[in-house]
Amino acid sequence: MSLDIKVVVKSLENIVGPEYVATEREICYVYSQDCSIEKGYIPDIIIRPNTTEEVSEVMKLANEYKVPIYPRGAAASLVLMGVPLKPHSLVMDLTRMNRIVEFDEESMSVTVETGITWGELELALKEKGWYTGFIGPGPGYSSTIGGAISVCSVYYGSAKYGTAADITLGLEVVLPTGEIIRTGSAALEKAKRHTRYGIGFDATGLFCGDQGILGVKTQATLKLFPLPKAIGFFTFGYEDLDTCHKALYQMAALHIASDLGYVDQIKVPMGPRKYRYLIHGKIESHSDEEFTAQMNLFKEIAKKTNGEDLGPSLGKLLFGDMVYEYFPMAGAFGNYGATCNKVPIAQAKVLHEKFMALQEKYEEEIKKYNILTVWYTFISGSCIDILPQFQIPVDNPESLEFGRKIWKEFIDKEVREEGCIHYWLGKVIGDRVAECYQPSYYEFVKRIKSALDPNRILNPGLLKLW
Image (cartoon, rainbow, N blue to C red; front, top):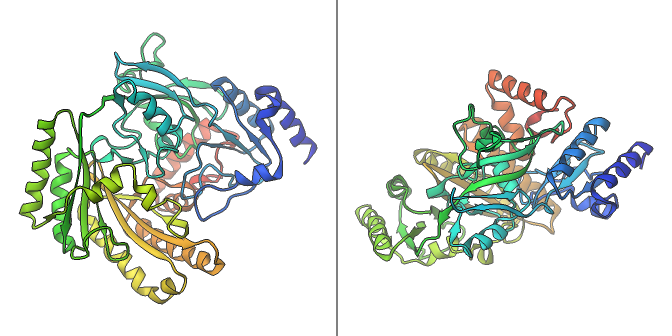
C-alpha cells in the first residue's frame, strides 16, 4: 500500500473508527463483485459509515485525495453496480445506516436510512398496519432502499404502485463534494417530509434512477398505505401469444392488481403444458366484497379472451414470497445473466421473437453448455417489464464465456435495435444506453455530473462518464 493510501486510511479511521475501515485483501475482494457475471476491480479500502455526517466527511476526504468512491448497499445488482470500475478506489458500504428515522402516520409517510432492507422496513411497518405498496425489487427483501431508488427498481407491487421512485416523497443526499441537501418538502426549513412537489423543480427525481452518479442517498421518505385485508392470486392459461398479450393489456389497464405478469413455459414448466403462456397475478383489497368484485373483473377478461382459469397456484408462487425457493435469483445452476426492460405491451411480441430467434441461432451451444433460458415478464404501471434470462453453470469456464456472449448480444438487440428502456443499468447495460443517448441529452448529463462532481470521484465509469 502506498504512503498516500496509508494517509487516507488513517483519516478515514478518524471519521468512522478503525473497526469500520478495512484494507485486508480478502475483505476487499468480496467488494469487487455484485450478483452479476462480471467482475470489477478490487478496492483498496472498505469503509462502513454510520451517519450522514460521516458520509459527508468521507466524501470531502475523497475529494481532497481524488480517490474514486463507490457507494454500495446489498450488492444485489445483476449488471455490475456498487463495485469499483477504476483501480485504487474506495467502497462505502452503507448497510450500517439501517434505521427508521420517522414513522409519520399523520402524513402517511416513513423516513428511513437508505441502508435498511425492504424486509426490515416492511416487517416494522406491518406491525403498525401499514406498508409501502411497492415493497421491493426482484432480488427480494434483502435489497436496500437506497439501491432500489438509485435504479428506480420494480417488481413486488409495481403493477399498481409503480417503481421505487413512484413511492419516494423526498431524499437526503450527500453531494459528491460533501454538502448535505434534502429534497421534496423537507427542502423548506419548517416543512414536514410529506410531499415531493410544490417547491420548484423536482430535485428528488434528479437522484431517482441516477445509478448513484449524482450523490449518495442517506435517507429516503416513502409513501405509506394501509395493509390490505383481503389478498388473493390468479392464474390463466393461454395457447397463443397474441391472445395472451391482449388479455394482459386489458388487465393491466385496470390498475387493480398489485402484481401482474406472464411466463412462457417453453423451457421452464410452471403449470399445465397445454398452455404455453400463463398470466398470473395478485390482488390486494380492503374488504372481501372489494376483493370478490375485483377478481371477477379479471375472470371476465380471461373468459372473453379464451383464457382458462387455473386457480391461484402460479400467482401465489411468484408473488406470494415463495419465488426464491423455486427460482433463485442466482440462477438454477449458478450465475445469472438477465436484463429488465420496459416497453409497451404491444412491443413485447417483437422482443419475444428476437429472444426465440437468438435461442434458435445458438441452439447447439445452449444445449452443449447447459444454459437455461427463461422468458419472464411483469407489469410496472402502464409498461411491461420483460426479464429474459440466461442461467449459466458456474463450474464450466466455457459455459460462462458463452453465456456472457449471448447475454450481451441480446442486450445489444434490446437497446440498439428496439430502443428498450431498462431500469437497472450498471456498467453492463449503462454503457450501451449511453452510446444511444441523443447527443444533446448526453451533453446535458455530462454538465450536471461535472457541476455536482467536479473531481470525478463518485461512481466513475458508470454511463461511460470518466
